[in-house]
Image (cartoon, rainbow, N blue to C red):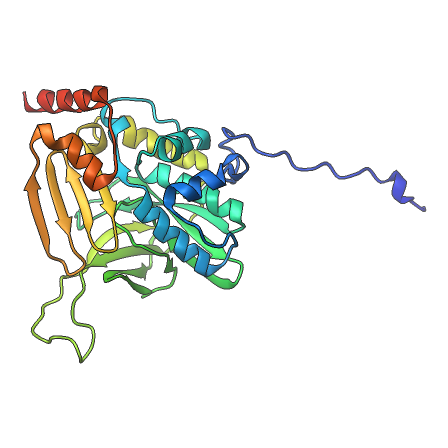
Amino acid sequence: MNIRSADIPAPVPAPVPSPTDHRSDRWSCEVLDLDAYLARIGYEGLREPTLAVLRDLQRAHTTGIPFENVHAVLGRDLPLDLPSVEARLVRDRRGGYCFEHVLLFAAALERLGFNVTGMIGRVSLGAPKVLPATHGLLAVTARDDDREWLCDVGFGAGPLGPIELADGAHVAYDGWRHRLERRPGAHGIDQWWLYQTAPGPSGPDEDPERVPTPWIDRHTFTLTAQYPIDYVVGSHFVGTNARSPFVRRLFAQRMTPAAHHSLDDLKLVTTLPDGSSTTEEIAAEALDATLRAVFGIALTEEELGGIAARREAADA
């Protein structure tokens, strides 16, 4: 039987996911204000899905948007749809925790043509027990490179660029070192471990008397794909559960090539790439100035009052 082309129904285009359609494995890139996002992180380079651009974007995002949990401490809603995240981190020039960072970065990468897959990890930092899977990460491929790259933009402490997803991969961005290790896991699913350390001797020209800081396991993850809805679930636990540290006290972090700044309530720790650090107790009345000067975070009087009330309740 002859079938004329006119008799063949035209294909129905796939529906474009709405900004709140968390059933999609896409990242709502079509609603992202890309110009505003790139201005927020100070990126003025090429807009193409290449490895060089990926490196520059991760560096700009990691150093341009701080880590903070103000909304969680104050008990505010933290919707994880892209317009809400964009409003907080881009338009309001605030920071966020890992799921907010990762969702925003994934949307920007997808908009530029990168292939992006979400993953979830378990923060360890040397803990002897299994902790909940509450850390968002991304696996990314570029148009001009066949390798897959780990992009960890939401931890608050780097790395400043992507790491190849390969056993033993090692990077040293501006002296900040990270490496990956793959181990056999349950049911044949490999576990990946990300380690971080301060620089130490790595060659014959370096000082042999200098003792390197041991590697610290930061988090573990698998390559099982995760979707926006998985981040919504993880974010709900992190931002609302009484066992989550993020609802009990203020955290803020800012990563720069020269130093990593970390605020835990009123304790400010500044760490340099060589592993040296200084610790300072911030007076309660100096919190606002410290957040503005060190972290680029400007809170309202109401927010500062709410954080102070939380502290007083915890100390009572």
